[in-house]
Length: 346
Image 1 (cartoon, rainbow, N blue to C red):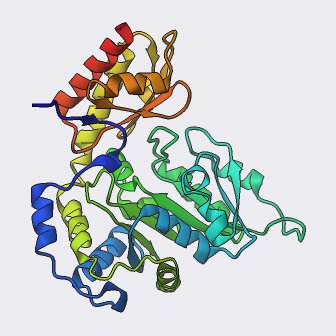
Image 2: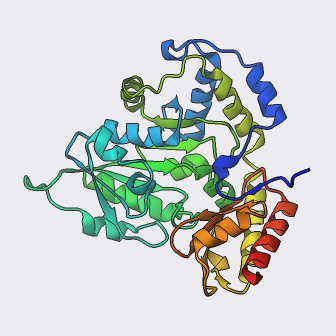
């Protein structure tokens, strides 16, 4: 019998459990586009309360949440300020320009985060020759920042600077639940001060798809128009929404296990010759490390470990990422470390 794959490529690789599948099979459904799917309606109400917003909209993906938020907040030709490594910059196929028609003005922060002072320095007075700055975006946690958690005080300071300048605010909360569990800060507290925010269910929460975009009633009404415009209505989507409700009930607190395993993995990486890592920077479930071994790069190491049943994610010439999630247990972490060490010795 073949050895099961230990998939540390991403937390999007999670698969629904048998219990989650049973809930999906039994879900009450209706025409979501017409507002007739009771499971979707229940999820939207619960999500809005969780995030501390007036309303929420269930969408197929987090990328769609980001793109709809940009389109609602901005008009074509306007500018969005964000960190240089933000998801909207490099991982959404140019959607900001293609769909919302906006320009992105990157701020070079630290570990995917910038300060209120940096934001202030990037603001400019209204100038007819320059794009009108309309929106400030943050990413909690920061993916390219190694799963770094924005401190609550800095998030609030950034929002205060933005609003004082007349700009709207948006939070990409793809891994916001990880930040909540790791820090103990309630979800609504992190979202406070942000005019729109979303959470993803297909990552650490383990659902097969879907995300919730939340904001004011007026914002969500316009977001629904964009949902229809770009094909985001899913009809009897309660089948998937039921998995998201299950995830909120059963998979939220257990994110702490993923964080503990990320620490376990990071400490193991630190003991392997030819690799380097700052273990202190591992706050949630993302582990980034560098390859220093002569003759090795990220692609070569990824191929070598995959051949032995461990999948890692190259994130540059010598930078590698591993992501812990509910489908990788302690034994999987131990095995992954063995395979990595053996590959480099070989």
